[in-house]
Amino acid sequence: MFTTTATIDPDEVTNLSKVWDSFFPQNSIIAKRETERSNVDFYKKNDSYVHKVLPGERYYGEPGHEYRLSLKGVNSKYVYCDEADLDNKLTEYINTLAISRADFSVNIAEAIENVKSGSDESELFNLVGEKQQNFFRTSIEKYLRPEWQFVPNPAMNSLGLLVFKNGNRCEIVTLTDKALRVTQNLGEGKSILGKTVDDKHVDAREILPAMQGNMELIKAMIYISQHEDVFDGLKITGIKVLNPKNGTEMSVLLSQLINNYNALVAENKASGAKRISQRLFASDFEAIVKNAEDYVNGLEQLLENGGHGANDNYYTTEWFSNAIDLFKKHYGNQMDFNAGYQNTAI
Picture 1: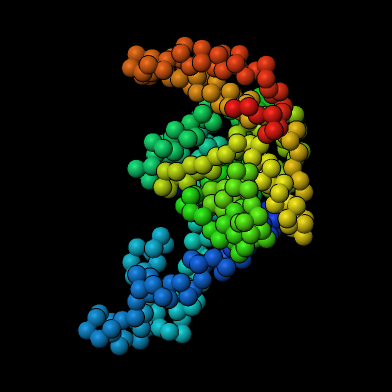
Picture 2: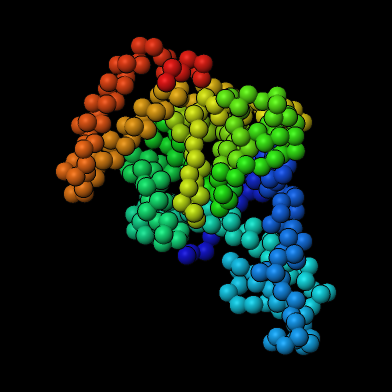
């Protein structure tokens, strides 16, 4: 792993964080102590982290060795301390974990830049565990192709946001180390509006559940709303969230994401967030077609480079291209490529 050298603008991080924290106070970026694993009491109550040295155990009765700390992910060896220093040690540990999460996504961003500049791809894929490398490669490899441009932004990268452009298209990937499909109670309910709206007043067909993955997708929407100038002349054709550490990903229809974000803005007027414009996004139909075409292009490049594909898979590039043509013929005359969710007939 290499050392992060990017300069991060704290104001840019804070502007996004404040809105996200307003939407999801139980999942705060800034107020870390509101989350379980950012509170020293969580570790004090968990013997696998904080163990009081007992009679007969090594170092029992020795000064500075009242507690044995297992600071996972930071120290490979035990750390010892007395009661007076316990809170300080745990607070330092919590802060180090928060920094390491930011460093991980910034390191990913810098590795992508290096690969796009000609470095070996192993520099990128070695940043995740060996078991997850195939997953991460599959999820990110299309953005490493020459037609895609990476748009670095150290502040946003530190929050796990990666932005890619391809001609007049744009896609966003958000990275997290949290379990994507865990649903949280935000106070009044378990929908993404749960901070203020009881579940009985929510249409579950329209409003997303308060899963960590959905909240990470909303983080990307906040970024877009605060940086619309970045997307001038572009159409966003995809937003997804990845957890490279456990090999999971999530995405939803762009129209549903727009509707849920704007509903959050309406419910949280004090956040200062502004509604997001449909004009920045491709329709659901166009986004699906574009991503299918990406798949075809990737498979064609694989075949050109001598990889496997058509000879050992029924779904050849010709078959997939024909499928896309049929899809367009069947739905194209019914749908406006710039239509919103209401006009999406698929």
